[in-house]
Image (tube, rainbow, N blue to C red; front, side):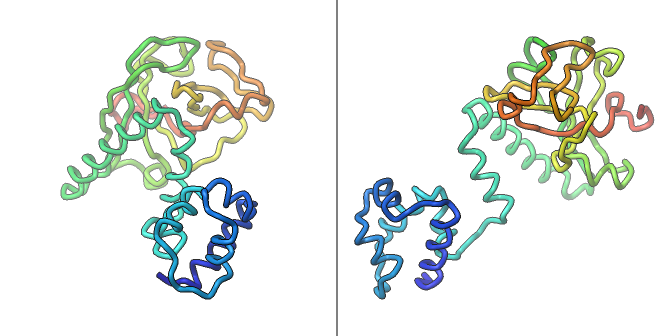
Length: 242
């Protein structure tokens, strides 16, 4: 372990998270003298148990602290966000991750570009998809290059409540990379893992076709954008763009 890097990194992390030595001592069950020795001392013998306690308080990995990062910045950011999710959301992420892994392995040799299509299962209420879901797949190998670069997943519409905006069995192609802009139609998760379709405005989230409640801006923190709708296609048919 590079002790000098560890000490510098620990100081920087404490400053970024605005955590004092006293706060770290209380939360890690370590004495301030021990922590001062860790940060400012000359000893190169720091116990692993001490590093683990510090990492737990700072919500990071030991590898992050000692400069042996095996994950990209995006992967670490995803890991950090997952801690704030509900159990139902984590189960959905786990299901999707396993599916995506199988998909990548299955089509890597065939040279196809595949995206997952969520097929909601459950009751509809106020325009939101509830309950569990199945996942199908859509081959986008021959789709226009710009669309392939932006699209991350799709979701199938299994209700006629959004007509004439969306129709039964329409597939909404969505991007996780785009930030919502005015008039964009966006998929949102709430804290319990339910999914909503809403049109984005700075002051509110508008229900589609008047189906569902208008969500005012002061409640935006209750909803997490899942993806911006880029395009609508008929089921598995590239020729039927609208």
